[in-house]
Amino acid sequence: MARIGITGATGFVGGALVPRLLRQGHDLLLLDDRSGPVRVEPEGATALDLDFASDTALRVLSNADVILHLGAVSGVMVCARDPEGSARRNVEGTRRLYAMCRERKIPAAFASSLSVVGAPDRFPIGEDTPARPTHEYARQKAAGEALTRELSDLGDVPTAVLRQSNIYGGYEASGRWITKSNVLELFARQAARGVLEVNAPGTQRRDFVHLDDVLSHWEATVDFLRRPSTPAAASVFNVASGETRSVRELAELVARAYAKAHPDRAPLRIEVVPNPRGGIELVEPDFETARAMTERLLGVKILHHLPDEIPRILDLAGLGARAPGAA
Image (tube, rainbow, N blue to C red):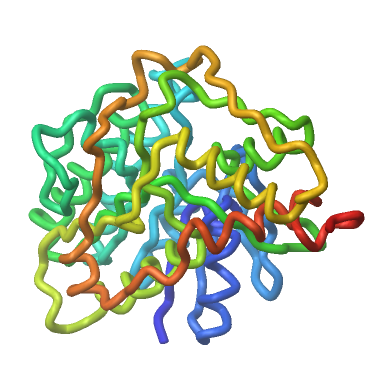
C-alpha cells in the first residue's frame, strides 16, 4: 500500500476517488482549500483546509510516496475572467509543488484536459498529440503538462499526465448526489421543460467519459508510477472513452431515452440556440480520440457507454422510466 498525497481532494473527482483508495488500504494525505464549486468531505479521513502550494501543505505532502495533483482553478470561463489569478494557482502553484517533489524524488500525476490539443492537424487525438491550446484554461493546463515533464527530466522520477475528456456520471456522498455541470446534466434538467437547447452549430463533437472509468485510470496510475519498471519519464494518458458524439447527437439520444420512458408524453423538442462559448469551442466534424497506449500501459478498459447511461441520468433527474408517474 502507498502513502498518496492528493490535492483537490474534496472536488468532484477527488471526492469520488478518495473512498476507493481508502478501501484499498492506502494511507492518504488529503488537501483542499475548498474554493471550488464542489465540496465533498471524505468519510474515514480528513482533508486539510490548505492551498496545495503553501508551506504547510508542502511539508505534509513531502511524506507522500506519490502525489495525485487534482487541485486547480478549473473551468474555461473562470480562467477567462481571471487569467492572472487562476495562473497563480494553476501554474505558479504547480511549479512550487513540483519543486518539492523534485527535491524529495516523489512521482506525481497531473490532472490535465483534452482541451490542451486545441485544433490538431490530424485525428484521432492520440497520447502523442502535441498541446496547442487556444484559450486560457487550456493554456494553463498545457503549462502544467510542461511542468510535469520537467519534473521527470530534472527530478529523475516517473510522472503522468491524465488528459481528461468530458466527464459525466455522479455518486452519492453524505446523502447528496454529486455531479459535474456538463451538457448531459443540462439536457436532463431541460427535459422537464420539454425542450433541449443545443448550442450552435450543434455539430461540434466531444468525447464523453463516465466518472467510474475516470477513477479506474487514476487508480491504475498510482500503480503505474510505483512500478519499479516504470521509466523516469512523463507518460501522457487519454482519459477518454474513444466514443465521440456531436452535441446534436447527444440531444437525440436523450430525446429517444425520454420517449422510451414516457411513450404517453409529447416528444422532446430540440432547438439550436446561440453559443455563449462561440469562438472558444472547437468545432471539428472529424473529432476523434484514441487510447491504445493508455490501455497498454495502464491496462484500463472503458466499461461505460452513453446509450446505456443516459436512461440512468434521466432516472436520477426524476424523468426516467423509474420516475413517479412514468409509463
